[in-house]
Length: 247
Image 1: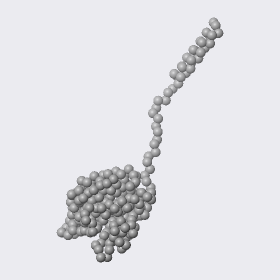
Image 2 (image 1 turned 120 degrees about the vertical axis):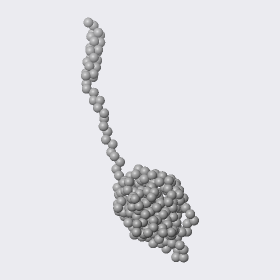
Image 3 (image 1 turned 45 degrees about the vertical axis):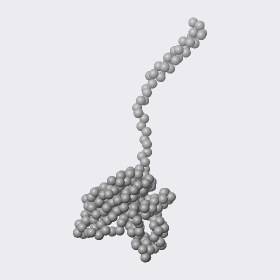
Image 4 (image 1 turned 90 degrees about the vertical axis):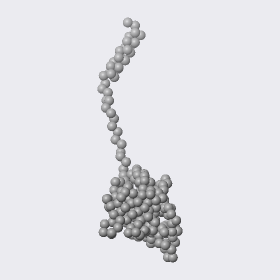
């Protein structure tokens, strides 16, 4: 046998051995499991610093320097209001449009922290202006966006509706007429007229906005307003801008 032929046979035999070894090696075809870390909820933070000062409200609403802030209230979801009970108002989906910061409105969402305050202002020779302002922090930005989207849909459907609030022991129900519902990219707004026992209160304005993981909830009463909820929208945007700038 020639040397060249011997070399060729050795090469072929070597390749066959290599292929046999490869073919006989066990192949692990089990699926690879990759663990992806779940999104972490936002840490609860103090929200009081995002609420407007008396000076900021006076400037935004043009009421002059005479304004008084109420006590700051901060805490978890227990700080939400219980003015309206579960079966106390109809239609249920319009409660959040007519009434501010109600627990039954936020119950289905993961609330981490709440801060709220009230304010009264206006000139001594003019009609009083008053407001209530709240910030609600959700567990995540996605939760806040979902709540805002659902709330916007509710407010649009409630335009022109009348909410009836049962008031046991007071002799008459409160009725609230919702109108002028409007929406822009980050704020939904409405006008609300409350009446009870034949007497109506000053027209109210509602605005609700979203930024990050926070919802801003505003109620304003301004007898000077000529209609619509522009002043409440201005206050809501003031708070939204403060949150965006400080977080």
